[in-house]
Image 1 (tube, rainbow, N blue to C red):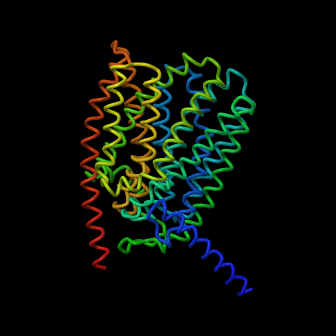
Image 2: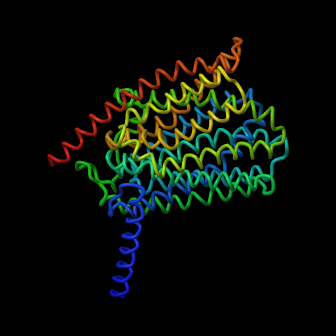
Length: 448
């Protein structure tokens, strides 16, 4: 038995060395990180596949309920996000991450199965109302499951690790999104929605497996100064997620970055929803249209994540890399104002979302590697969910108000240019602060 176990460990070690040599051709990865990188990929692949099965279904249901109702759906999403964060923070306070993260994912999986039952048995009139609740729920689900994933990543990897690896890890998310989008685009016209939801729920159990394996491996990856044991409950105040961002100028500016991103994203989303409702009267065609856009975004994103993101962050630094997305947004809304067309809007949406997923999102996560451990879970959860959805809400009502006073979508785009200029300055400030905090953390680690 001992000999068999030794042979098994030798085979695993040989496989890891081979994988390490292959990965070194793409990114700078250390031998001790290979296994964790693989489990991180499987984890994020599972949750993004799960979400991208749900996303086009959600978008179609939002359109079916009427474009004029979208701002109310965003308001409901914000309220639901505030409600859900408090019990999550309580779990963070009393349980180790190897327990509170699986509980979170299984809660969402149970919800998906309940929606599958409701949609299967609902009549045509009931489906509209179930769809509105589902729209709100998926909007919460999306941010929560992804935020929890990155909470674990920034708790395991240091700032320098994140600059090297987060872009490549995010590629696992993109592959998952491509698979989920492709499945929904190909099956939406032929398979009942309830069956697609069951598949989405099952994928979350794979994510739970990834959490457990990563939690076991985290000790050998930790290069930070000594802090609270990763296997122990984080403790602290249940409401620290709300109070800490208001006490820290750094976290306030991280909040501002996400708020401004969400506002401009919502402006684009409203324009996309209007196009779909006018151009695709059939529900199946609407779902396929949304899924096809997702597919184009994710293919482009994957190429950048695999080969460019890590190199860009290490070459330019956090600040200039973060500033790329607001700069692109300024150009994109400017072009839309001068050359308004469906083709321009779709092109801008694809390029912007690709830049967010491939460059801005992994870089933004690096910002959290230098904050205290309690803030990596509680404050990050609040910022990633409540602040983000508050940005949706501000964007939704601003779009409605600007439309109500007679501005057309192109004129509204010019207002987004001004917002994006403020966002650009915010990104550069964050980059400077993150560099200073990471340097201080490195000096402390060396001193110990």
